[in-house]
Amino acid sequence: MAGMSFECAVDRFLFKTLHRVQNEMPVGESHWIIVNPCTNTLQHTRSILILTLPVVTVQICEMKLSCWLDQQLPELIHFGTVTD
Figure 1 (spheres, helix red, strand yellow):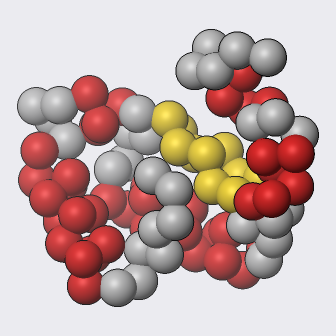
Figure 2 (figure 1 turned 180 degrees about the vertical axis):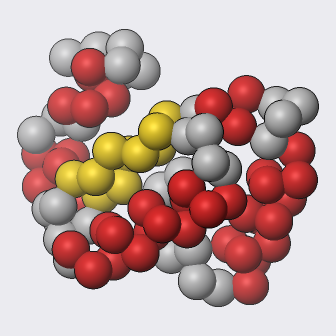
């Protein structure tokens, strides 16, 4: 989910909804990649995800989104989500 801050009311509503349905949907065991240049924001977002969806795996990338895009989304390539 690109561009989510996980701080606004809409994002919080989404997480409440995901938490409610996590056992019935694959999102409960999903893999998340967080891209942000700020260490504190990365850790905070990771904490929110793990509290909301305890079984998820979270990978953090401490860099600007533009740099991650310039690197051609290496984590997504690793998971086969995009091809190089």
